[in-house]
Length: 157
Length: 79
Image (cartoon, rainbow over all chains, first blue to last red; front, side):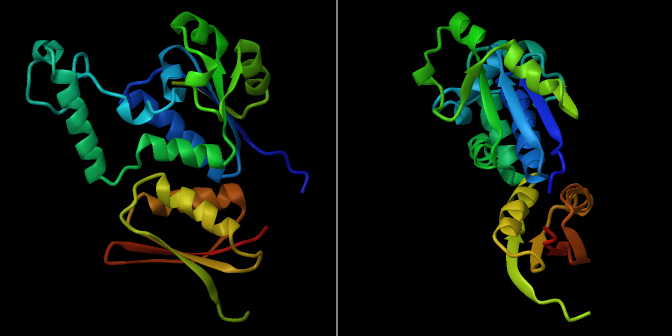
């Protein structure tokens, strides 16, 4: 079969819980639909590629006005509230049988999704290659654009 | 046509999107072309998701039903 595979290109720029799920859900699903997938992790999104980090990502209630917590916004900025919101969010997700981020990452890698770490962000945040998971590759804007120029879907998250 | 003979059953009950699809993909990779995979799921979104997955991958939904909130898909591996 010489049929060309569909391609999905994603830029992952966030690493709070609501920002980290969409890239991994879409990437793993697209791979299961026989797409070729690459994710470019940049700025805070690069944290998703740090070893042992995924299941420690958080959500802050400050600024999340739709978060169903019965507290005023200003209280959300107090110490401890991010931990509480994270705990609540994780418990709701567990209750809805949502996969953990690490599980989605493992399934994505297993399905052949290429994880690209942004070299410039590594320099800015002073991340060493060995702090990132072994499975990722390091690249820059040109690496992503070359792939995205032939992609059927390109997303910035 | 001969009767459908299930080669493998995947229990994807109590799993949320996208896990039923991810596990179905793995299961379909483990059977031979022409064989049938049975998937059981409780995710109500799976009905449209399996249709989309089938359209995208080319694997055929040979039968589908829903009884008491459990969705059953029989998928024929086509390639």
